[in-house]
Length: 339
Figure 1 (spheres, rainbow, N blue to C red):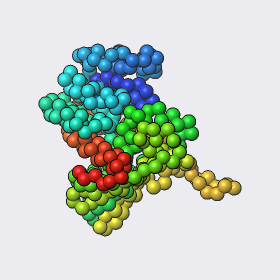
Figure 2 (cartoon, one colour):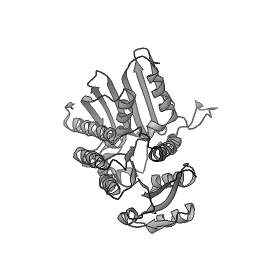
Figure 3 (cartoon, one colour):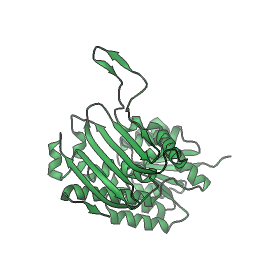
Figure 4 (tube, helix red, strand yellow):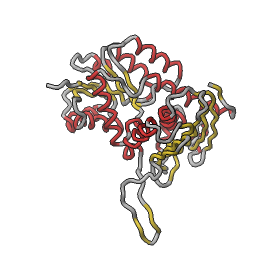
């Protein structure tokens, strides 16, 4: 009989439910045995919809479940660091949604804590690493298809939400660059060969959500990052796109260029009518990366059971946070930040 990873999942909000459905229904060699949420209605959903056998209101109680091998954390960012450390101390492998933390000292503390637990492993999920198109681009780069890559442009641009509901959560998000551009930062380092950052500069504006000004946040921002090997990256982040969620990336090399996601289309339907020719766009990041969310769950389970390396390390997650924090500082001070 093949090995099975017995999993408990903490956090059953919108994204947590997607993870739970993947783990319960479609990840080979994984079994979702337990969930954790302080909200009884969310626990009941997991019991009814997914036939999960055990549910907990308290995270430490779930960690005490001796029948669990690993935990998935889809909880608020402010809890990630401590919950990762608690899980490792309890003898569980850990998968955690991004980011690792909102501050650099805490990131470094978790990295060091994980080093003290070599048997049990932790991974932060940067989902775009597991998108088929990005993986194909990475393979093409490694095969020399565009020569030496030296420039990345990458953007995360969300569909405009007229209600401004996200503003309620903005004070705990770390700001636009840490919440959104951290994905692009991680992608740029990965596609360029993981160079160390040398210097960053960022600008931004509040185009449509005035309440963000009171907390020092923005709804649109642009940034540049210079790496120590001479390569560079440009980032754009937005919460105000009229047409849909629009993630795309260009990688420029000495012998060519790659583009991923340039047309943010929902499907292959093209509409021609009195308004012109158009296609529909993905409404959110989950529709764009639904297959990648599944793929990185599979990657985590297989790596733990087979003893193979993770594609992403805690050090990668800490470095992406370090650069994103520097972008926020640069935007707030109006000055470049040396790294």
